[in-house]
Length: 115
Image 1 (cartoon, rainbow, N blue to C red):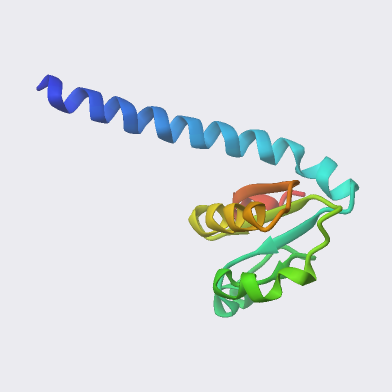
Image 2: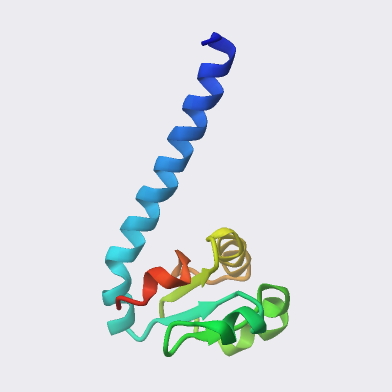
């Protein structure tokens, strides 16, 4: 295999493993976040949310998060989720830029069903 292809492939593999590891760490902490009164915010669209969701989660689609940010309690952990983890990563970044400190990306909403 050409050396010019090996390094980008290794970087991609390392990135994927890092993302999986960080999501695993967050999921291990979800029970303690919920005990602290944590809020699960599902940033999928309303249609996606009605097709299936984690009981007790709040649906605030990513495109309306800025206007509905006052619905969130900054004193409690916030767990964001979506269909793949991409929108929840954007939501986490947005909340942090708005002054939220205890925000965690759980990635795929289905991973929260066991809690």
